[in-house]
Image (cartoon, rainbow, N blue to C red; front, side, top):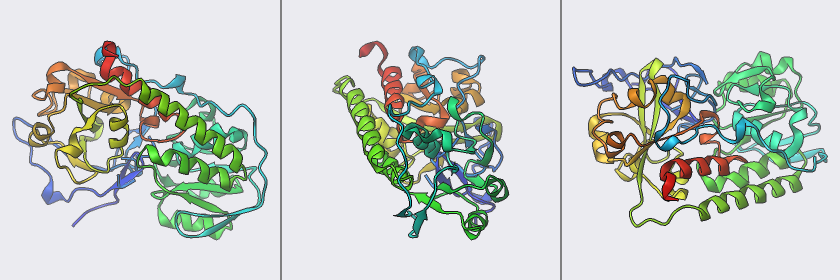
Length: 373
């Protein structure tokens, strides 16, 4: 039996571990506890990270603190100065339009003067389409500079219906994991169009998500333009990945030291597509981990045997940087731990699979290979 609400990692909602299934700490282990408390920092991660994350783990876009160790190889966690790059020409919405929502409803959008995107990823798309001046609120995971002064109406998919309705929006954009259901129902009952967008699980979802938002905003041509720009930039980064006989094994770890949360990503964590594009193997998924996220154990890490570890910058900071990371049981015994080979990317963009994914991929490639490129 599971207790409490699920939590979301980067848009993926993951059920809490039942009390009887939690590993019992001993002298060689730190306690591992899944809890619904966490600091206020992401977005997206659904029952996948992107979204073991929901009102609990706000995966924000903060870089490592000054006291945290730098990623091995001098890699930088920040992406493009934490700003989005809008299209050169600002499109003019042609409305009304009726579009199909991912939840199966037909949604008619009559105006788009007051837009409320309920995730950092969706905010990023609207701003990059050139319509950021129409956005009147944000999710706490919208950490890029252009959105930072907007009022926060949702924290990691946990929505305040009252806050949203007080802003009198013309359109609300939501993820499949946005909730609670009661709050979303209140917004719909008030007559506000709500478009649910299919979740992002990999690089193939970048274009469809951009175009879904663009159609709802009445700017389909801009959506196609941004999709092409994003795909071209991702392709250019992939061309720069060094050719290697032995692909590095990389384990994606989700860490929240303040909440004693230490998880390893498996199949469906959302990181596999990025790692494969960077010429690497998702060590957790390849080792046979079927769940999106699994509590870290020495056995799981030994089976994954990662050459490098991928983390979110806020998570790395929360455990005390690389020095704290290698103190988590089992990490120091992996090839990655012995070499202190860590790749750190900002929480707010790592698994967004949106207009800045090329910058995320470039950061991963740069940190992973360093001078080998």
